[in-house]
Amino acid sequence: MARRNTAFWLLGVAGLLAAAGPGMSAERRMISIAIHGGAGSMNAGQLGADGGAEYRAGLAEALDAGYAVLEAGGSSLDAVATAVRLLEDNPLFNAGRGAVLTHEGEAELDASIMDGRHLRAGAVAGIRHIRNPIDLARRVMEASPHVMLFGSGAEEFAIEQGFSLVPNSWFQTPLRREQLDRVLSGRAQPRNELQGLGTVGAVAIDRNGNLAAATSTGGMTGKRWGRVGDSPIIGAGTYANNASCAVSATGHGEYFIRSVVAYDICALVEYRGWSLERAVREVIHRKLEERGGDGGVIAIDRAGGVVMEFNSDGMFRAMRDSRGRRSIAILREPPDYDRD
Image (cartoon, rainbow, N blue to C red):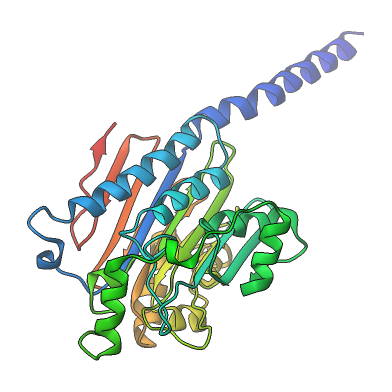
């Protein structure tokens, strides 16, 4: 009888621990978010006397909105979608309103999102009339049997899902039209102007330990023939897996596609047991550079650690976590963490 009572007592304690453990660990678990607004050629002179205050303000707004979702117990998917949506609506960045224009003078938008918990993903490419491409990419993931939809087919799906269309002119700004004119006349290269950058992305981990990544872009100024870059391609510009990390990339898309950058980083973490920092540096500073590619990534590992790395002159980037660290940076400046 004593042995039986002891067994029941042990089972009861185990049950209590099992019930309390996840809640307790969830409260202690790190939450983190990182965002980017593009990488490439830039210098302090281009940012102006205020050091790019408008860009920093745009990054801060998206960062804090995404973090607020996590802090309230929301999912990493909701957090990255919230952050990217705000960056899409900010005409300073090359995504959504303010996206760069094609050779024909129109906006063609790409986006993707990935859930690291179940490896679900959704992407859209070449769309012209959806205000927030990231929302449509998520709908592809959650309400279709597919991963990527393109062009008119993606927009037909959007209409069936209740999305409202906007005229393509809604995305176009005077700055982007002037920029396209300079590129087409040979007075500028697509990636040699600050305004030519701006692909946006976000990665996050929530209190349940779930990772997510999202990326959105207008592509390259003057692009032709329906060109699609790495941003909507799962494994190249976006990847998330709870077993390793979440990554969103920005840079010269063709090189990121060939190098399968986002997946390669997570594979090094998962299969070789490398730290996220080591994996990112191997891919960005060795593999990508050797192949002639430039750009960067933001990444989060399953412990909530954040890495923001690039091999170009600068990258619009920001991060925030539950340790109280908050950083916004553009050029090659050391992290200057604000404490909450």
